[in-house]
Image (tube, rainbow, N blue to C red):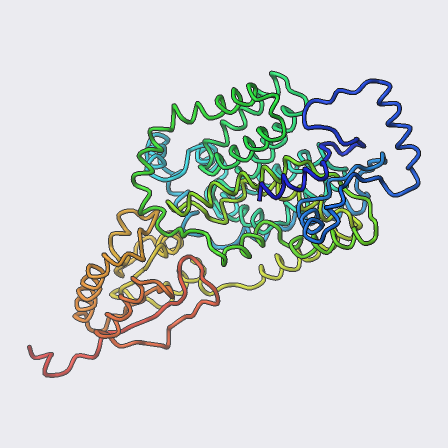
Length: 568
């Protein structure tokens, strides 16, 4: 991808400012006053004509034109006014941006959310010790720890922190895009970020993802400042943001890799400043958290076993989470603008290079050790939003904004009215209604933490029996382990058969078991229960979509005791 970008850039140069510029080599500008005056006169001559472009004949070929469409039109534009978004459009989009995340505040908690709550509920020293045994750095939890003590631990109160960080991230994306793009296009970039499914998902999660998006937007903005107007103050600010990001998520180093590649290729004359800035941004993490990371990597085999190397089937979910409605709009807008001769929005060359450099390392690492997960890519979402806005803005910005807001509202609010029978809150209510004192509740995978959370809130003292399968999960409820391991199959079969025989000795008791499709431990447990018990389909529940590691609830009952067996 980087090679293709550089190939296109060699034919047509991409200006790095939203103002009118002439093609120039990458590096600090050096133009005499006379040259500036001549340039202004030349632009004035073309004021009533299509903007001049600089291209080679080779770019007229279909492949090169398609490539230029995809990475952004690197053209020279005439000077033009830079009006803000229309007031009505601004107010409407501001209201939609503010309201889109609200339905998610009231949704059921997930297993990861409950883990965050339980970890942050510990004393500070114990919390840090627990985080050191996990796979994430501590910065988000240092914010979340006082937050729940100030505002409580209800669903809305906990998610309010993620919501606040999301709103700040939207503002930061606008500030980032406005450095390069016209203000209306920058506002479209902010809307693209705010309406991206991944950004909306981050507001529902009691995790560090909204914080990661905010810090990413701030870091990219500071990167632009250092590249175009270097100073000690700007370098210090960029370094501080990178330090905070490194203590937020391990994927931050992927963003730094993208910034490093962009700095190397686009601003090589400042390599000493870049080297010192990157080193200063990484050094605190290496000193304070490096030993912890080394221990985490040793133990991460089981904790990250659920991750798979990225494949072809991951492309569409990744694009949907990143782009949302713009996934459909941007290519058509780009092609339409080229045919209609619409005015282009300049796209800086370093932006697609940064995206390529940030995505390539996790993809490659995942073939050695599980690392890639679409949710983690929120670290590049601000850059993606700026890129998509520049691509789509060549069509009427008002039309694009209206379509994005309409589609996003339709999807978000439409889904919010569909209550799932398989979220943790609904399943806990189901158990409270139907489970009897001597029944048994069996959880597979990580289905237990979230359901237990709601059961503890509504009925702390319960007389039924609860357990996870395999039982080792209860010793480390933050992760499941490798559910695809062939070497563990004999141990799982033995544990399932032993458990089923034990449950069969409890006449009159029922077994509620939460199962997952395509999950080896679930299949082994279900086979053992079918062999020893009788299914009770009257209370079965099939989930429309996987929720909290659950696809269905199955109920079994012990076979009736025969008179002969009762005499023994």
